[in-house]
Amino acid sequence: MSENASDVLAAVGTCPLHDINPMHPELLKRPWGLNKRLRDDAPVFQDPGSGIFFISRYEDVVKMAMDPATFSSKMLQPTRAMDGSKDPELSAILAEGYPQVPTMLTQDPPLQRRYRKFVDGAFSPSSLRALEPFIEATANALIDDFIEAGRCDFLSDFGVPLPLRVIVSQLGAPMEDLALFRKWTEAFIGNLSQQLDREGVRAAARDIVEFQHYFAARIEERRAAPEDDILSKVVNASIDGEQPLSIEECLSMIGQILVAGNETTSGSITEGILLLIENPDQYALLKSDPSPEMISNFVEEVLRFSSPSSNMFRRAVKEVEWHGVTIPKDAILFARFASANQDERRFPDPERFDITRPNLKEQVAFGKGVHHCLGAALSRREMNIGFKVIFERLTNFRLAEGGAKPEFAANALLHGLHGLDVEFDAI
Ligand code: HEM
Image (cartoon, rainbow, N blue to C red; front, side):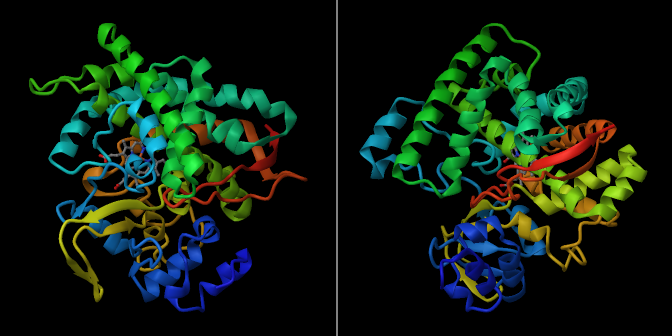
């Protein structure tokens, strides 16, 4: 198959499935055609390159997420990218850090439930309610910085800093360290992207080790002197007389909260603005009724459409027969949440962005079952409050003249825009 971007996309509809490389950067950026083809013709499909089995229909993705006994999440390095045994230099870098242990996202019940109990309090409705004024003040402060210019890169000026500032404040770190958090998030994401070369993997490992040492120090501080933040709640949680979490366990959980909590929410908020620009009828509907209910519907449809956590790994605990395909024991699978959210069997006319869709709450951007997103309620609050403030202060979003064309990043697990140059009018 030709490597040219438009040829790769065009071939998806016509060429034999086994000639398609689903990890091709162009298909990672624009996976919609491939996803439809897979849902229709090969709902269980083994990628010949990576050997990973892709599960693409809504019903199947949900079934998989609800059956952790068959489809395990337990793995340390699902992408194998950061495997020190194959690279002595990488191994030396990792030896400077803390050993990685599987916790929530990379663990199965009952242990996974144990870890969730330690953080549940930090994400309880009352903890999140207390955060609302901070989210609203942050959204306003960010808009203050660019409103007069009449244009911005919505991703780096709003989409990224809103959830980043919230999570930095909740992980008990000073705002001066924002740039470090951004760097560490990128290192984690780069490692997951499956697109790094050997040097890139080593650089990401160096950053992750730096992250570990930074937080090991913060954990000790919060153990000695707890404050009113998520970090203090996690490191000091005591459940039914159990031992508190070890430093390694805390680091694993903080790493997950940092990555899962940043890139995903940033991606959805930013894509929400692009979706308004691309769908003027829906934008008009929202302008005519910016009520909390309408904004909440808009947020759900943005989540369905953007599905930033597009694929998640599972491992088959035993051999499984599915849609005529034999999945061997220990095979790696992708639960394709983004494809599930576009499944015409569940969402009629799925490519239509429709904030009045009757079943928009059935979207599975946050997953399903035991691993259902820990930060779903926080993320929904950030998006609902963020958009409320945006609609109060800015209107008539349009792509900026002379700005970069909106482009998605190539990443096997996370889907999101590189940037979004927009113009707007101040209200
Ligand atoms: C739009 C925003 C978000 C999306 C689309 C999203 C998506 C997801 C998905 C699909 C899962 C399930 C993974 C699986 O089944 O393997 C998940 C789990 C998780 N998410 Fe999120 N997430 C978002 C925001 C957040 C935030 C804000 C946080 C934390 C502050 C967070 C923390 C986590 C954690 C820790 C897990 C693992 C839970 C477990 O395995 O028990 N996420 N997320």
